[in-house]
Length: 476
Image (cartoon, rainbow, N blue to C red; front, side, top):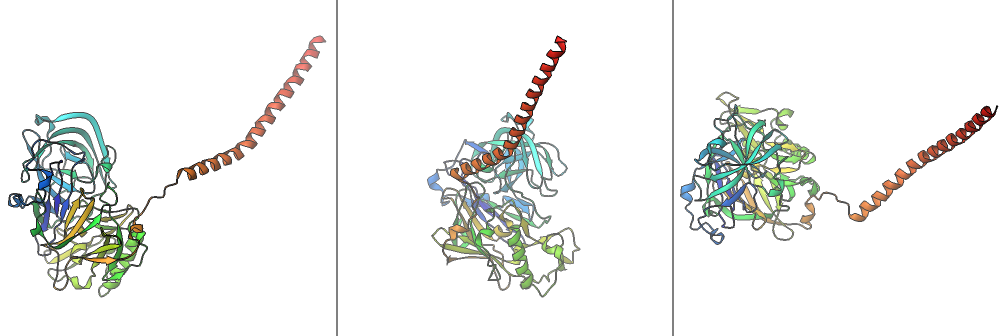
């Protein structure tokens, strides 16, 4: 994985490049301008201007091998926070927009951020609470200086959420102590934030590089194909078709994007809406019918194991996702292999077995193209031009007869219609609805008003009769 990000108008680029250490490897490139990013603030020093973002003068060698992580637990980069600097490993997540670090002891943290030891820390006296669909954290908002040791010569003042309490957020053995969200500011909230990050409990060692300064053409082969960013919150894209071993699922393309489709480095699995997931699993089962697997495997609840070195990759199909291209009625295809969507799981089976978890899962919040998709490719998050690019990485996933690929173009009409639009009533429809509701209320209130009027008249009439009777008795 490679991430490029603007830190300011100076055009500093942040690039991440994780590659699997095993032979079946992948990496991706992400281009993310941090201009307007709430977690990163004033730039104190910058090496070059925005016009120099081609990377031609950048020394990439100084930034190699500065990204680490574990398969299924996220990729992290070393950062230094405060004065004097405190070294922390920070998870990189394109599916959220909060910069937060552990700031209190936790069983899963080997170290944490000590605010009181930093001379440059400033408390803004504001609480932060961020729930995910799985897990949550809360803490206190402040600012401090942040640098990337194996990165550009840049120090920034960042808004930092100091995590003082959390539940199911940190992952045991993941070796990271915080999270850097690189999505748009719209989903950075003080109460509630981005997208769930966690699936899987695998621990295949991975490494890579965080390269800052430009795109390195040595890290990918072929062309970079771009898809427009549909909406600037998550990195939302439009999927126009899905195939299993070349067979179209033949679904309405809107269903692939219900209620959104996003690219998220902080999510492990390829997550699909329920109906799409059901159809995809049916097709994968049919293509791999030479072996029978328990239903729990397809739901991500059970593992499948083979004797070491005998995994039958050839019986599993390839999965192809077609993304809308930049040109009208044009799309391109991303194809992933079973080596990507079957995640290796260690520390469970004996040393004689290779065990895997099915890394395509059901989603209730739209399609998420997580690490399952991104690890095989060089991925460019280009916020300046509002697009995301995909190319085959130089350490792409492959087997004897197949390889991960990005190819195109393919043509079809009305691809823009595949995007899901939240139903919205116009003003006239809302006024009509209001009048109808008012009429219904009036119909219900009319009988009550009539009953109240009759009751009042009856009381008044009875009171006048009682008063007359009292006057007669007094005269007697």
